[in-house]
Length: 242
Ligand SMILES: Nc1ncnc2c1ncn2[C@@H]1O[C@H](COP(=O)(O)OP(=O)(O)OP(=O)(O)O)[C@@H](O)[C@H]1O
Image (cartoon, rainbow, N blue to C red; front, side, top):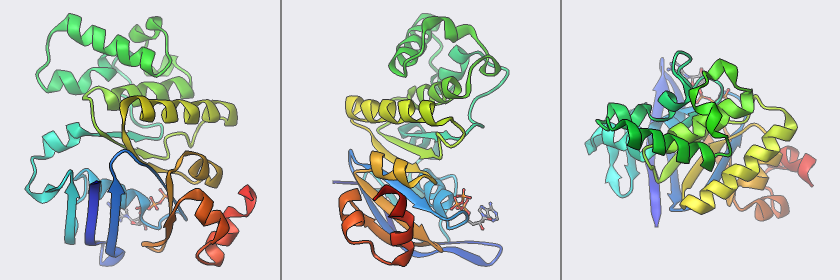
């Protein structure tokens, strides 16, 4: 079953078409990685999925419903969003960061919220003592784990991740890649994950989408992309993983 569908979507900024007649179906439970040159429209596509942007033309469906006719607040709760670096509130403890969405949604029971924060913290591989720390007191990798825990707090089925590991060193990045694969399987998540790293795209993706100039150049399994690259752009891109 398709969990997200973009149908004939067009999006322009200042008269410049970023996506034109763009179509995509994301299957429930799949890990879709997205790669392409800077400015090709990856983040724009992601933000159309959770309603942060609205299409000029075309439709976006999430779980079969046109999001133009869906309540935005409930939509955003069903879709976790993780971005590089900028995600956490610096003046809030880790616990407050993780429980932010449940609290603003009306969940005020302190014990329940504490237990939720602790469960999610452990799920992303951090120790209890981190709960009362502030983001600046954590390493980049630890902050990214808290960002993921926060995105999972509303129990979403879908996780949108925009270069979440871009700022991490190679070793931490590999650990985080393994963790996100584990979490995806454990929680049955659908993940759409933007990266600039072709190795990361190939390792994580059930399917990899290569974009160029607002268009999909190729969308296929890593194996098929390696065996039959769609064009010279894709061939050049995958050289380093062959
Ligand atoms: N809110 C906006 N207002 C005006 N132009 C925008 C806006 N958001 C994005 N753009 C432009 O749209 C184009 C695509 O941006 P987008 O962020 O989708 O690219 P991207 O592929 O995610 O790039 P990167 O890999 O650098 O993050 C860029 O030229 C960008 O400058």
